[in-house]
Length: 247
Image 1 (cartoon, one colour):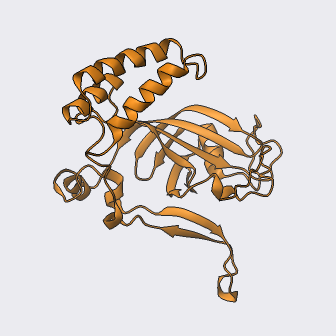
Image 2: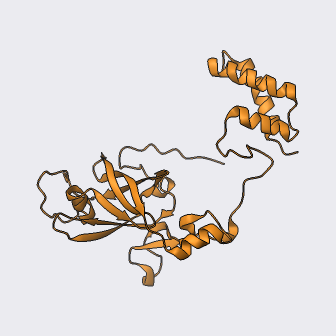
Image 3: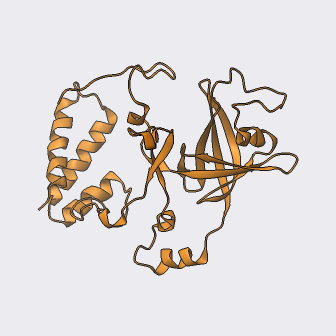
């Protein structure tokens, strides 16, 4: 398969479509309030959880040369949510809850990036019950059937010539589970030592191979040079290939 390489320069994608960078993401509403008590609800798909209780999202302010002004008059093209967060750095994020902005960064000439700490969440009790006792326990937000932004653009017919958002829902019937024959049993993000020992418990590695794998891993950690330490890398790689194969 032939590949095409695009070199990006700031907002210039050099002919590449931005959807090669931006995958489908859950659509959110960010509710903010200004210093006078006025509320605003701004949709965004540039957001995701970046830690157990931290959320990240961005607002765009297109065609504004300098929107980091100390004065605060309304300007066409500036999202009211951005202006409100200057007054009051707290918001309500749909699917999540009450969040406090802890970091704000300017990205390029048209984006503002917010990192928030989620300090309270509100969940319908029916969804709480489904998440604890339903057929899909632990799936959380997915039980609310969120929308994913897939594409923004025009259609190819006179009836679809306006710019619109195209969205989709995740088909829960198509979910796939990682295989059981590889990886730690009780630690999804376990250590190398845990993983190697559990592959031995499956019968993939002998006790002497486990011992050697741990020795090689320590040697590689001291000198991770692919050429100078090629022998260690090669021997360790062969053991790891054996460990990941299905038996």
